[in-house]
Image 1 (cartoon, one colour):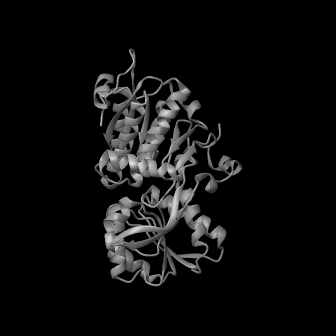
Image 2: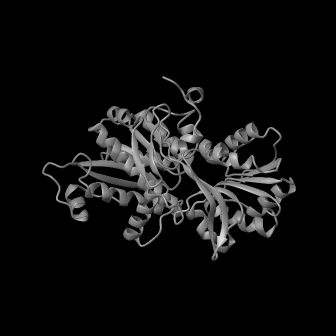
Length: 396
């Protein structure tokens, strides 16, 4: 979506803008064609946020304008899009990203070109730690943060023999590594007896299920998502992979991944996710009400990310009172902003936000998958102390 100019934006939103109002252009890049289950709700989320921001007078009287590009899930496409957004469209900062390898490519681009990048979805810890840089901030709770939430629950299980299934790229590799580290720290008696690394988007779910089953694990860590998750759940169920075994799974409680499974959704998996219709917090209730009024649809986790991402950007711009990169970075470090999950902030030390996640179990109710027995874990509770961050992130 492109709100092409102040006059067009004003017409669209029914605003009477002050004389001299200017456009502040934001460059959005995401995998719209590669993963529409997440990216389309994400687009709706940021569109709604932009409408709210501009309806309230914009940012310091200027109009927020988003120019959006599709990277098709490819780092090279993302860099091409970034160049176009900055050089041709005049974007003052970049945002978005879904796949972790794409996010790392955009983070490196931001560093090389000296432009702010606020990553919404990419979860690899490298973005804010081992490959962190001054120009990159991240909104969603990272692999480390979600692994810490899941490992706390996994450590309570009697299981000692674990196997893992994850897509063979940066996100999956990072998630498995940090989960192993955190679980074995809590439970030194745990061992990992099998690993499967199917290519992202191309899982041979039957073969994967049989290979993991052959290792005779007592519990399974799953990091698959999207269409690969659907295939794994169905093939694994048909082959008895999950019978008598505990399953811990990143992201599976998010409606964009749980809903397509319908009555085939797994039961009793320990997951992170978003119980949009059950979280009774005031912030979520207000968000859900506004989203349903705007789209006649319910929000997914992607909707939350897109919405919160644009609210964060508006807060940074308003505080900076400038579009210069160095002013934006200074404003972003430590800034607080509101999200459907409540107030969060970007930490100055590593540019990671304190946005948390819901942890619970999966169930099937009225023929559809849902989250039950859930709790919200604030991000600040599962982040390592500053002393440890300094060893994980380049200093200076």
